[in-house]
Each structure stands twice: as structure tokens, then as C-alpha cells.
Image (cartoon, rainbow, N blue to C red; front, side):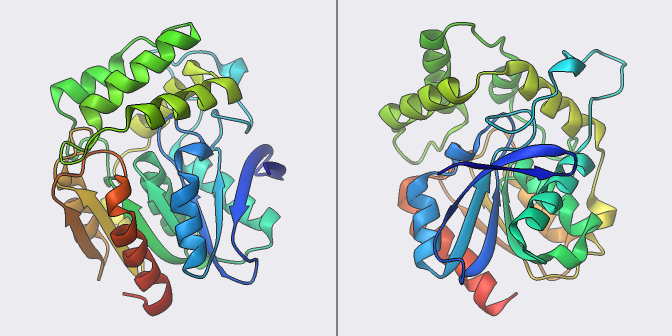
Length: 283
């Protein structure tokens, strides 16, 4: 069941898995992605490993507050917000959940938000897991094909949106694993039906570009940290993961051959085991 709560002056929609007595684990999703893009099976696997899992919609996607009044990002104009604001949203959600601190896992832009949260609100982060992310937008730039995906004009009708989703994940997904076209199409349909707001995604992208480099700030992060990255990621190449791990004192880096910019189902046991090892044992 989806719940909406007040957080940092906006509303955040979230869902939870597992026992409230479990270790609190917050999942932060990436650019333009909704909470449903943390697959239920992945969330339940983490819950089975002793976590109380919460997945949520960042601002400007899904059922959380959208900044429609800010319109489309304009070249040379200030962004509607920056990653600091999304990190503060996350801290506000933790307040609403009654969580003084949590184990924080972020993927892609979600990894950037998780990094920012650890820098801005260090007492709120028990452990940090950064997946397929980077300390800054100029580190590990995307391939030309992946960059074209980011620049693609979003289609207006539902059928075209679903077709574009399959094309997108065919380019940025994991070349070492077969693309589940049926699941990609189903997720795209569900996301479209929950909320279709391409300008929200554009504002999020502008926030990434306006937020600069976190390398220096990550040097002050003192919590146990794990960095997971695909060795064949075209959107944020593995150099982004290596830079993240190098920036955080004591961080452990794990890379996966054949993994691109997604979480292949066959790797779920390994990925969730790494997260669980971190949340139970630390670095």
C-alpha cells in the first residue's frame, strides 16, 4: 500500500516491506524512476534478510509532489532545485517514518542523493550503499549511445512510451544478461499510469548538473560504505563507481561483469548479500 507523508515541505509517497522491527533500509531510485523501479522481488529479498525496507518516489516523479509551476529547465537559468534538496526530502521522510537513522541504498541519481545525504546529514546514515553512481556529473560521462537516450524527446502517447522504454533498456541495460522485455514493458506501463511527467525528469536532470562534484565532501563520510557497479554500464561507466569508492574512506568496491545500468535478476542474490553483509557487519 502506498502512503503519502509530509517531508521537507512537500509530500513523499512510499511503500514498505518486512517487519518494522527489522533493520531500517531506505531505497533511493534514480533519474525519472519511480518507487516501482525497485522491483518488489528485490525488496522482498532484502526484507527476508532482516531489513525493514522502504522505497519511495523522489520529488517530481510518481505520486510525490511535482514542481509543475517551475516548468521546463531553461539554459542559463537556475535549476528548480539541487540534489541537496532531494537529500533533505529523504531526511524528512525518515522523520515521518520515525527513523533517527537508516541504512541507505541509492541507485544512479539515487546514489548521488544517498551520497549527499551522508555528507549533509551524517548522523542519519548508518551505512551507505552507492550503486551505479558517481561523485559528479563530469566523472565517467556516458557513451554517445547512452547520452542519446538521455537527450531523446519523450513521446506523448502511452504505446510510444512503452516502446521507447524497451529501446532505452536495450541500450543502457546489462549486455551480459537477456533483457526481460515483458517486465520492462509492464514497468513502463505501470509508471505511465501512476504518473507521466517528462518535465519532472528534466528538472531532476538539471538538479544533477547543477549540484557539482561531491568528491571532497565524500572524503568526510565516516560510515561503512559499499560501492556496487556494473563493468559494462554505458550510462555511468564503471569509472564512476571506482571514483566513488576512492573518495569514501574505507569504502568497499564490488563490480559485476556483464552488468549495465540496471539490476539483473540473476545478480539479486549477490547484490542483496553484499548489502546485508554491510548492514550487519559494517565495512
